[in-house]
Image (cartoon, rainbow, N blue to C red; front, top):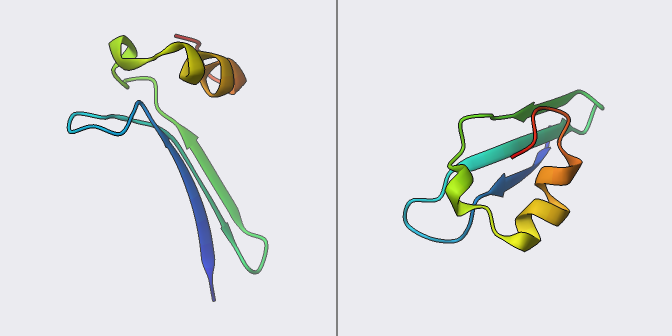
Length: 60
């Protein structure tokens, strides 16, 4: 069975931190998680507008 996944990080650099992860299996099983301990100092305008503002948990 294939499992597809997507992640969001605070950037493409050495010390990036994970913001969210989503997985979905071919049979329809789903998993989604958001992290609240990501490094908020690494959030730029694009991440704020396109990722953080769309999270379900606390906003940066």
